[in-house]
Image 1 (tube, rainbow, N blue to C red):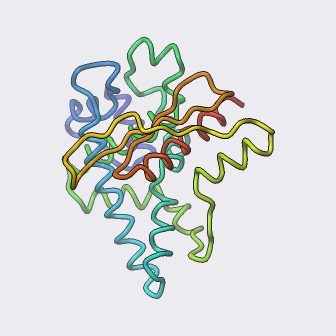
Image 2 (cartoon, helix red, strand yellow):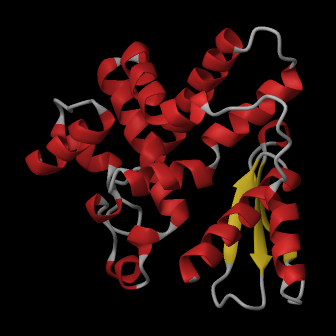
Length: 226
C-alpha cells in the first residue's frame, strides 16, 4: 500500500496519511463488503461543487446554461475515466475475480468511480481546500481548453449517430429500477445495443439523466472494444 500511496502522490499531488482510507477508495464492490461506493458518492458531490465554483469565478460573464455545459464536460464519466487512465489507476483497483477476468480494471465506469472515491477520501482526510487543489491539478489542462460557446452533442445523440453511420440498429432504453422517495428518486436504465454482448446500465435522478449515463457508458464500452 505504501507503493500505491507513492503512486497516488506522484499523479494527484497528494499523499494519504490513513492508508486504510486509501485502500477503501480503491476497493470495488465486487472485491469486499467494505467498498468505495460511499466515498464515490461523497467525491462526486465535492467534485461538482468545486468545478461549479471554479467556473463561476473564472467565467463571470457567462450565463447559467453555458456554465452547466462546461461543468458537465469536466465531471462526466468519460472525462474521469480518461483521468484514471492517464494516471495509471486501473491496476491499483481491488476487484473481485469476475471483474478481473472481464477486464474491469479497464472499464470506464469503474475507472471513473475510483477517481470520485479518491476525491471523497481526500476530502475526508484533509478537507475542502486540499481537495480543491487536487481537483484543479487533475483538470488543469481541460479547464484551460474550455470554450463556453461550444455545443457538444449529448451522449444519446453521439451514440445514435455512431450506430446509424454503421447501419446498426438503434439502442433500446428501458427503466429497470426506480428507488427512493418521490422527491429524491434514482432511476436505473438499461441500454441494449445489438453489437454489444453485455447489458449496460446508467443511473440518475431522472429517466433522462439515467439514459444519458447509460449511453455514455455504452460509448466507452464501444471504444474499449476497438
